[in-house]
Image (cartoon, rainbow, N blue to C red):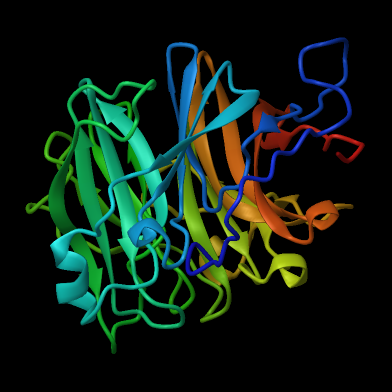
Length: 338
């Protein structure tokens, strides 16, 4: 789940071994280096520079969102955090400030950068999704230039959804959508006004995309590729270090509003989903993923818990390739440890 996670102070660099993507016929996820301690990551590419953002550290720096930057996307540097205070609407909605803010998502439309994020507390669906905008995001100074646009959408006790884990998709027809959700009745979606980034008043429909009947499903991310829309989600247990059982799943639809089916034709509203990646070796509990445009191609960013570092959450990316049936495929994991 993109939710409360306790991170230790001090930066833990990770030099992943194995092959890097780009040589020969091997399709291997890239070896990332530098400051990789990040949970629930989102990545935005600006030219050949990358900005990553993730869940805040509990009760550190106001619990605000964490930042990383990279030139080229392989070696990452710490870029601090986004402000020292949470927006005023958070405490008003929840009754008090939570230990941290969760699960940001970055996207761009018309030159403006949109940042959605979640405010909640573990196990409750009194939650809200907020928005900040940046008229000209500078990847060299990613904490500068943000304007708070307030609360976008909230859920409350008694409702059958949870307004966390936001992810925006701007579609080729000029419309915009916000997917979100965790446990309860699963993944939901609302249409956005593309320019303001707020909910579209003329379409109040709450769309249902995927569900496990109250079971663990969250971290929705949408990607448009060819004739299909792809819905990426995480199944099972998050945020438990080496006891995490997170795994990344996917389904697709010819309509952004669904229905989304897996490779076997099972509806994601009936618990369907095709597995992309699960625990393997020291890469424990991969999830909290988000698909993003990476130049001319598509990539996926996610976190995992590193068994060689006692379960510290780490950032990882993989280019997405497409098989003969137009399903996404991730590269093999780097083979060696630190």
